[in-house]
Figure (cartoon, helix red, strand yellow):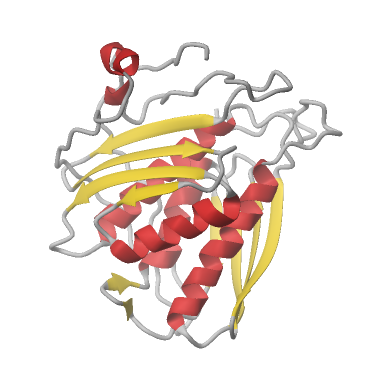
Length: 273
């Protein structure tokens, strides 16, 4: 495997999505905040990476691994981000071309369950380790994981050359039916039209569902539309949303053989840079 590239960055303090007004009966996502608790996530990292300072990389360009027998001369689409603020310490690693493995310990059990849906149904390998001020609530931890996840996705995709770019999937879960459409356009936008009956699923605040996707959209450069076509059970609605998102993202990230490595844009660019 070619060497891993990284830049050690300053600690992240920037936040993502702001408040968005909702229609009557729907909750608006709140603005993000900062954070700072520290945790050592170097366990399990290869000695070479540790010596190079790779795991200290923050929101500056995280590692993107080189080709490791992927075939077709393509680079492995892998990235990880460590985000530290005064309220959270978050490590997220994403392998777009994975096998559906999920190793998540976010401190928010229901969020771990939903991240497992993204990994399983998108066939992504996802690792999340986080500590946050969950004695207050789950807001900061959920938000910062979404921001770091979006960064991982953007960096792992690189120039986004050769991908389908668009994803569209409808997922049922019993009576719930959720439609997700996305465009990895480099332009962040999120419209999340969900009617979740209960305020909490277990201890998880359901208002964080739209905020999770808004935050992820902001840092990944994704245009995202989520529509609830049917549903009464809160758990079913939210889980179907994450499943539909996973399958749509899998579509959008997949290589289009007819593109032959070209960017799917008349402008020739799909990144935010």
